[in-house]
Amino acid sequence: MSGLSGTSVIFDLDGTLVDSEPHYFEAGRQVLAEHGVPDFTWADHERYVGISTLETVTLWKREYGLRASVDELLAAKNRRYLELARTATRAYPEMREFVELLATEKVPMAVASGSSQPAITAILAGTGLDAHLRTVVSADEVERGKPAPDIFLEAARRLGAAPGDCVVLEDAAPGVAAAHAAGMRCIAIPYVAAQADAPEFATAGLLLRGGQGEFTARGAYDWLVRSVAASS
Image (cartoon, rainbow, N blue to C red):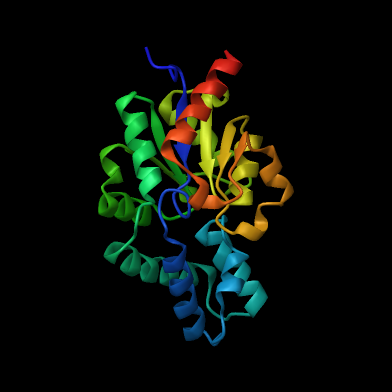
């Protein structure tokens, strides 16, 4: 019998399972340039890591005084992003190994992402992760995005799991806050290293300050087994 019996694992997608933030940045840079904002930088982009695409473009409209509607901006950014994501999105090797390790143990898994459903589907198919990750919740399907717990609670519902039996993997402060609000344990792998001291990250059961460079499939698995044993 697995030491993870009764546990479900929920993954954030962008910056956690796959290295897609460069595509998001490039899609955003292109859309903003078309709407008269020519100097959008990576540092600007980092302010929006971890919130949904809809919330990002809503903030842009206000912050940059854009004329286009939120719907137009959202459609343009999603379209650009999909073009980039389909061509080459890389799954983090240790994350892929972790997913495969959990799959052999028959641990129920889901993806809960602020991206659009077509983007999530395209990335999971393109990386081959869709072989193991078939339960998917997009921010478009819930009322409130992260840091609200809605998306993780919906993922748990679809897995038929109690929130207290779920462990979330997240790279951004809003997602870690959402996991905490949902009553779930969390493994935090900060994408933006400078944000590791954010108070939200302090709520994580396991915080890997070095981000993906510090994450190993075996280390995460062993922590999971220990934390399940401690809570049973």
